[in-house]
Structure formats: structure tokens, C-alpha cells
Length: 170
Image 1 (spheres, helix red, strand yellow):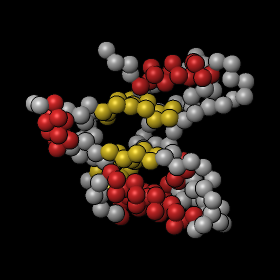
Image 2 (tube, one colour; image 1 turned 60 degrees about the vertical axis):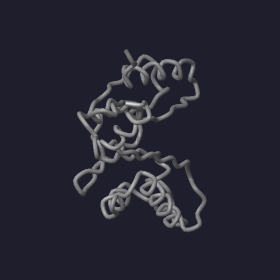
Image 3 (cartoon, one colour; image 1 turned 120 degrees about the vertical axis):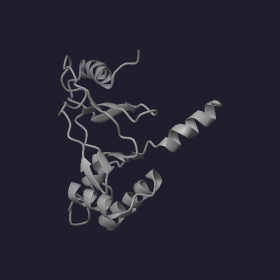
Image 4 (tube, one colour; image 1 turned 135 degrees about the vertical axis):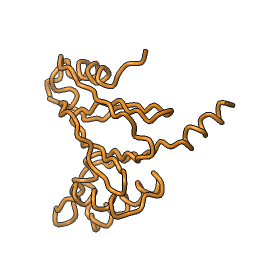
């Protein structure tokens, strides 16, 4: 039986929170997707909410507001599930995206992120990440990055499942 994301977060929190006098912490979104049916099990630990792109629109996932990892040992993290993300791209990112600042210290914003994801036709996960990387660079307008920027986008499709089966010789 595999460990659930909430259990992993709880264990990580206990380890990183022990003797953490400096109050260091980390935010994270962790989960796994069943590639046969798109079922998503996840736990969000103080991280930005991922964006689910579906039916010509997009929305931030509404999630339980678990604390960042490392602050309070003994905290029990709560996990969540989505029945299926099949054929719905999921975009996960660090706050280096929405909080990216230009030379006037204006942030990129959650609103701009949603607007771009809604206004651009989804072609692929790679295209989505590249488009947003370019938009952040344009927004910065020469300003140095004020934070790290990590992005992940994926889409589970029937084709993905068929490809995995082909690789196994099925």
C-alpha cells in the first residue's frame, strides 16, 4: 500500500520541524495521479493552488489550507482527492510566477495568470510552461528575478494511457 500524500507531508513536517529554531519552512504540493482513470490524490502544504484548465476556462483548485512544512511538528496534514483530472490540464507553480516583479515592483498576479491561461488555446504542457515563462520575462522588463520560478503542467489522456501500455508490451 502506497503512502498517501497527507501522510508524507505529516512525516516530512515532523522531521523538518524538529529543532527548527530558525523557523525555516517549505511549501509544497504533492500528489499522485492514477493514469488509468485520472484520479488525483494530493496534499497542499501552504503552496499556491494549482490551476485546473477545463471546458474552455480555468480555476484555482479549492483546497484545505494546510500549513507550510517545518513550522509545527506534530501537525496532521489533511489530504484531498479529485475523482478525475482526465483530459484536464493541471498547472502547478511556485510563487516566483504570480509574485514576479517588474522594475516598478508590480507583481505578475494571480489574475494575470488566469487571464493568460484562459485566453490562450492549450496546445501542450510544454507550450503552456514556455508561454508563461515568456510572459513573466516580458512582465519583468529587465528586472532581476526576486524569487525562484518552477512550473509543471501535465494532462492525462487516453493517448497517455495507450502509450504507457505500448511501452509495457500490452
